[in-house]
Amino acid sequence: MKIAVSASSPDLSSPVDPRFGRCSYFIFIDPETMKFEAVENPNISAPGGAGIQSAQFVVDKGAKIVLTGSCGPNAFQTLQAAGVEVIVGVAGSVEDAVRQYKSGQFQPISQPNAPAHSGMGMGPGFGLGRGMGRGMGGGFGRGMGTGRGYGYVPPSPGSPFPSPAQSASSPEEEIKYLKQQAEYLRQQMENITKKIEELEKNKK
Image 1: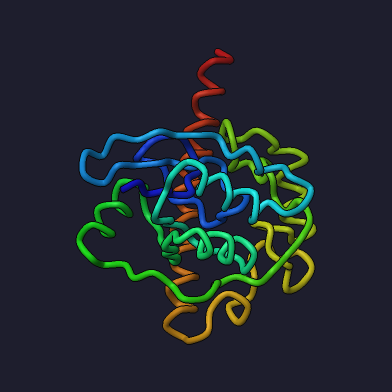
Image 2 (image 1 turned 180 degrees about the vertical axis):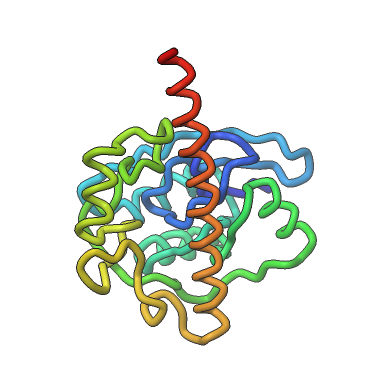
């Protein structure tokens, strides 16, 4: 059995990327041996249909389970049709997510937990994507300023995340989703800070 996890970087300590279709990497893991393969998402900058293309990519790689933060209807339908279980609301590191799955803490969903959307979304910008900090200028300004955020339909100008009403159907799910986003951003801020420190050291 192979598990696919949406990830921000290509290793097991990476935070789970809350985006499925436009995550930075997919990590394919054998949960028994914990051997893994990290693959850069070829659809991160797709002009449209990233969810479907990423879902098909995961299916073609032989994954039977997907662990991610959010999954839109198009990607969900593609995965479901191929018999792939989808588990959303996953946060923390990739390794922790797989261990939690193995211990029975997750249950697959029967419907998508994110709205349909189109367009490029955040891509590798926001300073959080490939290479940590690549796109700090244009990417960060574009993602925060227009509210494209993680590729969802923005609830209002300038907001990088969907409103809780769009991403969850109960107060408990809203809280879980927001905690997930807060943890993701906290980890990304730590990574950005480390990257800045490394760049400053290299300048000296």
